[in-house]
Amino acid sequence: MVLSIPWQKQLPSFIMTEDLKRIVVTGGWGFIGSRFAIHVLKHTDYAVRIIDSCTYASDKSRVLDNISPEENARLEFLECDINDVSPSMLRGAEYIVNFAAESHVDNSIEDGRPFIKSNIEGVFSLLESSRKIKTLKKFVHISTDEVYGDIAFYSEDSKSDEFYPLRPSSYYSASKAAADLIVESANKTFGVPYLITRSCNNYGPGQHPEKFIPKTFQNIKRGVSVPVYGDGSQVREWIHVDDNVEIIFELMLSAAENEIYNIGSGYHYKNIDIIKFIERVTKEKVKFDFVEDRLGHDKIYALDCSKVEEFLGERIFNTLEGFLKDELKK
Figure (cartoon, rainbow, N blue to C red):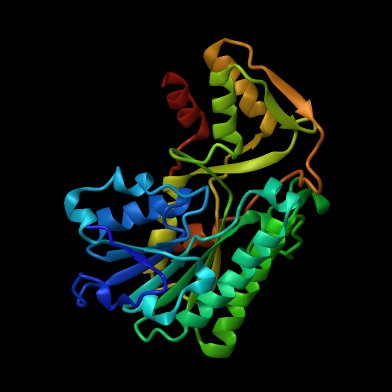
């Protein structure tokens, strides 16, 4: 049974037994948060309490269509903005995993205010409530490789490790960098145990069509030209959402505490090369137009993930090529 409870009400109306272990997932109806919630429900006996404000990028079906009745019985839901989360809503949580964020860079260029409100003020509010939870073992904050800014500023061959300077280029990445620092300060001042993960570009099923890969497929199916910023030479590192989720999950349950971990696959692609790969697979010309480059557009992101590899071990990642081939068959 999924409980949809207005945030103004107190949590005692929950039907679920209090002896269940709980993980709170903010932004749990979003692209990455939903895959994480599914992973927890399928691989643990934890109850999962999703807190989500149900914005345009949220979709409950991402979770509800992919879990069993037994798993569904361990799922709770509160519709609430993270700015309004109270300690009672986090009651009993052993882990709080924060995926809630405004994440589309183009939107942050049009209007940065929602990004400041959600990604900075929201994280502060969530931490204020979290530090009052006596059962809390770890606050896990999901960040991004974009906080490091353009690696080409230093060298096109360099990679950013966890000690790399933060040089964000957009209101989005700046708000995420600020949130990272707020999380660290909550530990220093109040002793909130934390983990911060900084992952590269995610792809996978159910991603919102505002993002590059689903937008590309959507435009191809509609016979519409795909917009490509600048000359398409921007380099991004790509990881399948389930690979990212699995690492976040393992880090959450591990002994790691008060640490930052980069999460990447090592697979780098130019934006234009993704278009060219689709053309090779389909043996058809993909219509695309080079458009005016995005303001403040970073040229290269590349992560040094040796820290997480040494801690959790090396692994084989899903390939972007395999995902694209599967999508093209649909």
